Every structure is written in structure tokens, then in C-alpha cells.
Amino acid sequence: MYFAALLARTEDGWEASDTELDDVETLSDLVDLARDASVDDDTVIVFIEQEDAWFGVLRIEGEDDPRIYVSDGAAAARSSYGEILTKEILGDDQDDADTLDDLNLDGTEDGEPLDRDDEDDEAAASVDGVPAEPLGDRLLLADLGMSESQLQELDSDALGEIADALGASDVLETVR
Image 1 (cartoon, rainbow, N blue to C red):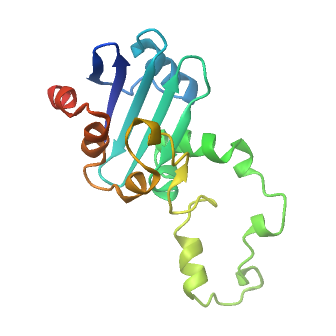
Image 2: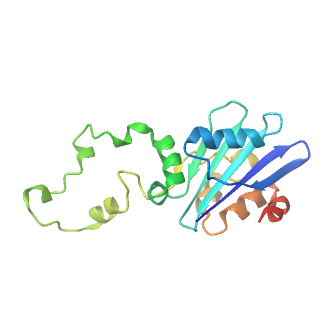
């Protein structure tokens, strides 16, 4: 289950709204949704969370390219909306296996048993080469009151803490 909210900056502060992601199939759809909520091409923050497994933040300002942050790339890559964000961060060429490193040769192709060690566990934590770690623009909220380290430390109530740093917790509570 997903939770999504939009925080749009206005002259009077922030306006919050929850949003349905049913019609979102691409990053362009998500960006259009955010731009529709924008007042005078001001900043819009889109927050998407999947059952405390991962969260993503998308920042839109006018016609600029979106800035994106995902708390756990591998977890996000396993979900439809997270996959949209991780593909944008990593680029669409993630599916192409052009080098030996990309081929994931683990010794079992000749029938040899796979001996697991720490390196293998780390590789298993990734999904199709997407690492199980934060991805994207870690500074996307720095000028709004949330530093890179604060963003990376977030986990369970990430949206609440982001809204608090932006000074938007009161308007967010009306949406929840």
C-alpha cells in the first residue's frame, strides 16, 4: 500500500494534499501531477511511501527537471512507483548488460555450488543492480531546512519529519 502527498509552496506558506497515484504510469505523469498543484511555478514536493519499506521525494520547481531522492533503491525498485523513480535516478540503460561486471557471473554457470560470503549477501540485497541504499539528490531539501544527513537518517515517519523541517506539519496533519 502506498501513501502519497503533495506539499506546494505558496505566498502564504505550504499547502498540503494527499494524492491518488492510480493514473501515474510514468515519471512524466508524476511531474504533471505536481505541476498541476503548483502555484505560480513555485516549489512542489511529492512524497511517496510504501508501507515503511521505502520512501521517495520528488521536488519540482517550474519547468526545471525534477530532483529525486529514494531512501532504499533496492526496495523501491521492487515496486511500480519506486521503479519509476529509481530508473530516472540511475538512467534507463540499467537493463543493458554491456560489461562483464554487469553479467553477474557467480560461478554457478558451470554447475559449481555457490558459496555465500559477505560480498554475495551485499549483491543479493540489490535488485537488478540497484543497491539497497539511498539514491538520488541528497541535497534536494537542504535549502528548505533539511540537511543531507537528516534526510538520510529518516525512516518510519519520514513525511512528518520532512513537513516539520519545511514548516508544513500543521497543513500536513489536515491531509492525514
